[in-house]
Length: 171
Image 1 (cartoon, rainbow, N blue to C red):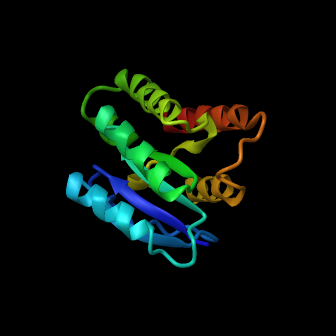
Image 2 (cartoon, rainbow, N blue to C red):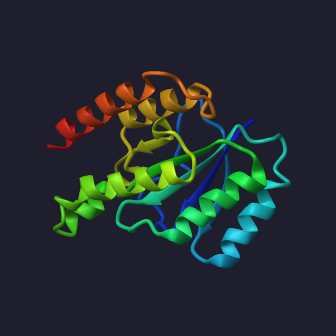
């Protein structure tokens, strides 16, 4: 089935929404900004046909993760029984705000929140949707090509190397 895409408290990315990525089919459930949107998305997920492959939640690095986000992730998993993948976006926006030193801390905060929600580290992906390049779109497609619900030994190491290359390219 398709990947379900949700934008959680993010501004609409500068490029396409949902992002155009070769080989990835999206079921766009839109943006979630409040409790009403959260309930709508959970209800909509119950009616998506064919059954989604996974739920990809785009989260802004400009937003500090909190208990509300954790509760939403847990509720999504409990209600849908689908693999949940977090896509962290907006790194450049955070840097532009004059807080480049906060970026690593913010990424770690989101990763800790994902772990608290029961998601393995390899289900947290960093791709800046505002600055989606052919290469970053290709990397995202490759990360999604496997079974997003599976835990693969050593997958975290590959993700760390990819993230290191992203930092090198950015600088």
